[in-house]
Image (cartoon, rainbow, N blue to C red; front, side, top):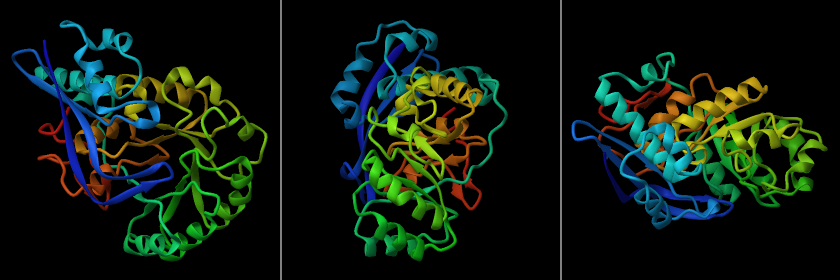
Length: 321
C-alpha cells in the first residue's frame, strides 16, 4: 500500500473569526492511499486548539507502517486530524475497489440531503446584523460568539434574520456567570442550541446551573472515550471527524451517544467538500447539521458537494466514497 501526504491552502471568501482568532484560508492536509489498482483520499484540518499543525499531522501520517488496515489504524494513531484523513482515505479506497458506496459497505441507509447551518463569524454587532440580513434566506444560522458583551450581537443577528433558526457557538469563551446571564435572552430570541459555553475541563458548573436551552459539547467531546465525562452537563454532542479521528470512530460515537440519550450535532472545521463528504453520512437524522465549510470558501474541490434549498447532499463517487 502506498500512502502520500500533501498540504493545501484554499482561500476563504471572507475573513472568518471566532473567539480564538481569525483565518483567511483553509489550511488542510490531504492523504492519498493506493493499492496499485485504486486510490482513495481523505482530508483533515489540523487545529491549533488541539496542538496540531500541518507539520505535526503530516509527520504522524508519514510515520505509519507500510502495511495496515482500518482496524489497525484505530490503535496506530490517536483520535485527531491525522487519523481522520487516513481513515476516510481507507474507506474511499475500499469503496472504489468494491465498486460500491461507503454507506452500503458500512451497512447504513442510503443518505439524503440535510439542512446545514451557515456560520456568521464573530464581529461588531452592526457587521453581524448586516451578515445576518444577507443570509436571512437561510433556514439555519450559526453565530460565533464568546465574549463578555455578546448581548448586542445576539439582538443584532435576530434583527437581521427574524425568521431563521439560530444556534450559538461560544467556543469556550464564556464564564458560568456570563452564560447564566445570557441563557434567558437566548431563549427569548429563539436560539435553538448553544455550543460549548464554558471551557473544556472547566465545565462542571453546567451540571449545577440551569440549562433552559439545549447545551452541546464540542471541545469537551472528542471520541467515545470522552462521553462518560459529559453526563449531567450536556444535552447534545457535536461530532467532528477531525476530533473522532475518522468516520469509523464517528459512527461508533454516534451510536454510543444516542444509546446514552444525547442528541446529535455534526460539525466541521473550515475545510473543503472532501472533508465534509464522510460527515454527511454521520449527519443523517441529526438534530443539527453544521457542514458549511465549503460555503465559506472562495475555491473548493473540482467535484464539490451540492448545496441547495434541501441542504447539503451526499457526495458523488467522483468526490469520495
